[in-house]
Length: 112
Image (cartoon, rainbow, N blue to C red):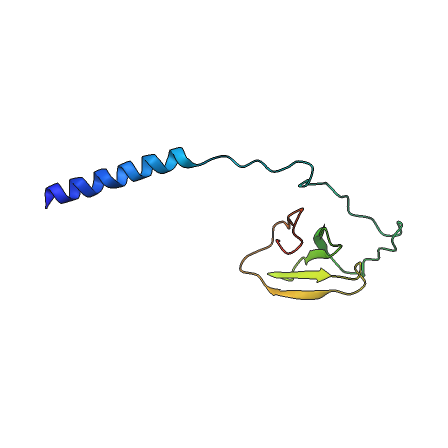
């Protein structure tokens, strides 16, 4: 039994070591995948942004397809989205944890 454990352990060690040498790095094409910093507009600026009284919106994020995502403070675990430039908003459903930031893949608007 001890020889069997030693053989299995050696086999697992060799398997682990060989898997470490097979990984090849993948480099994203910088011309097609870019992250950009976008400043959140303030009220009254071009684009007719309006913030309702008493609102506390955080993490306003714009996807590549124009969809806006935001988190309303004190609305725990709720992510909202707008497909009409922010004129109307809909809940995307409950998320599993507190929202501390929102990031969207620069090449896939569905990857939040």
